[in-house]
Length: 348
Ligand SMILES: Cc1cc2nc3c(=O)[nH]c(=O)nc-3n(C[C@H](O)[C@H](O)[C@H](O)COP(=O)(O)OP(=O)(O)OC[C@H]3O[C@@H](n4cnc5c(N)ncnc54)[C@H](O)[C@@H]3O)c2cc1C
Image (cartoon, rainbow, N blue to C red; front, side, top):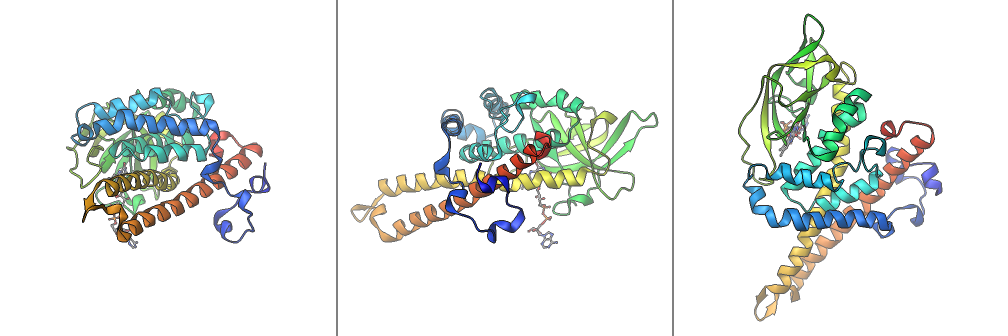
């Protein structure tokens, strides 16, 4: 283990700590096993997603859920789930590799990211043993799909200001959830929602695991979006939905912390997803520039076009370098926590 690994970077320390080139991870260092995971993702997109892009964009009934199930069969939904819970348990950096390679999948990438990220991680990181035993394997296999219900009509950036209420029943057995959530990815087919709501006049949100077939849940039609048209984005209404008290995630008022921590992971993962999309755009740009002829030559022969393609490559290379360096830093920090005796899931 390198010196950096033993003493992982903290916060913005990467700017000031003396670092040698060999301490910085680059994609040239992927192991054979990691390359195989990357190849599996490439193959999945080429065989299952790319040939079906039109059908996906038309939101053909059942297609996106079936693609998630196929990804589940290959283990792609359980990369971040520890082996003890039946997952692949790969490190953060390898997970990022899969996110990047699946980032070429247009709307599928959005459904995949929402299911494995904001959909599954609240349960994985904050669920108790009973909750994990009940739901994790279903989400890992793709049998169940997950969604994350935080945003409301008046609560976007100011997420903790949501109006959805959770009222404890007189017998103390369940909470009754009432409120409106919007722009919920995978909303149209999710089986499990992580819902953020306020109890009484609490300052902070509380998180609940809510099964989608619970009585009192209804959905608005699919949003018509400018892009990622094939990803399901719905409003979800909760009208006195009974949620057993044992489905509270973590503790009362811990929901805001859960919501923000999960979104923090989503931010860097989004970097991986868009890098995958950007690389695909470069490949397609080069193919087109070589095929398209004007004034008797392929347009790739002209300086202005070459400059644009070079800029695409330079910028993507910069994103790739920063992304995997940061991913290695996160992996190092996680490993240091584990070596210090912390539980693997908590360390993640
Ligand atoms: C395709 C899609 C999928 C989504 N999926 C989900 C999902 O699965 N689950 C979920 O819960 N939510 C989801 N969302 C919602 C998303 O998380 C919110 O859009 C996001 O939190 C921003 O909120 P908002 O859109 O209400 O923007 P607003 O909060 O209304 O912000 C509008 C603008 O004002 C700016 N602004 C706000 N406050 C300040 C400030 N204090 N200072 C300066 N500028 C400010 C913002 O930066 C932004 O530019 C999704 C949204 C989209 C578009």
